[in-house]
Length: 279
Image (cartoon, rainbow, N blue to C red; front, side, top):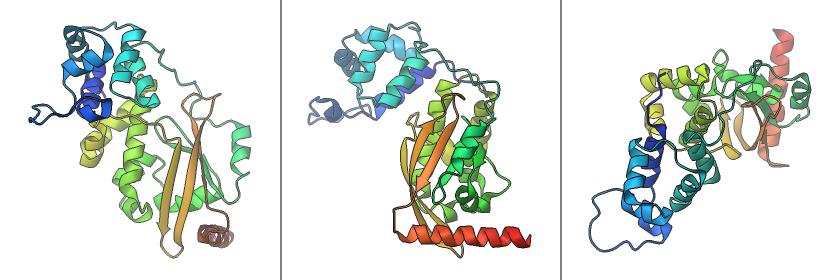
């Protein structure tokens, strides 16, 4: 997929449009505003730069902003830490990460770690959200999507995704925002480029979320699964970066101790074991 020539400007415009004057301490006023969110001039004042300079930054005519300017603009729009880091990368002020040669290979010690969570769903994702490895619980939860190893494609293309993921809109939005963050971290990754290109054409809902130009890491999440014949499973997820394989992430979803979800997971595993023994 060919990247837009002015990713920095597009990201600034998208965030400026969703930042309300009240969010940054500016008076709202009684008259109608012709633009959604902040005006360019308002961002410039808040960042301590000239209006002309900020306009050139958005338009792509200023391609070498200083770290101080980028930091000031990010603070002016109250960007989250993930969004500010993404802004720095788009301004070429943070070196882009290069995926390791074996980025789709999971270290043996990490594979062993997956099985250390007998009641939790644990799996490893690539930068493009391919499921590289999973433990028994995760395999059982993802069984309805067997044959579709990419979680983005599962969410937007698989016919059972909205049935299994009870809070599908929340999961889908978080996944797309995290994928855009990965695209900034790995701008030369062909797997991410091809995935975004394919999904933009095949899934209008994906394209809409992608065009929000919002980034956010999936550090914590709450997911609800509903599998036919098993019941409702509620898991709280924590995401960990795999430092010896840049871009890989370990996700661990844990049920509340003593909850119904624990019993449902036990039943699900027992059913999967019976199926394996008779298969």
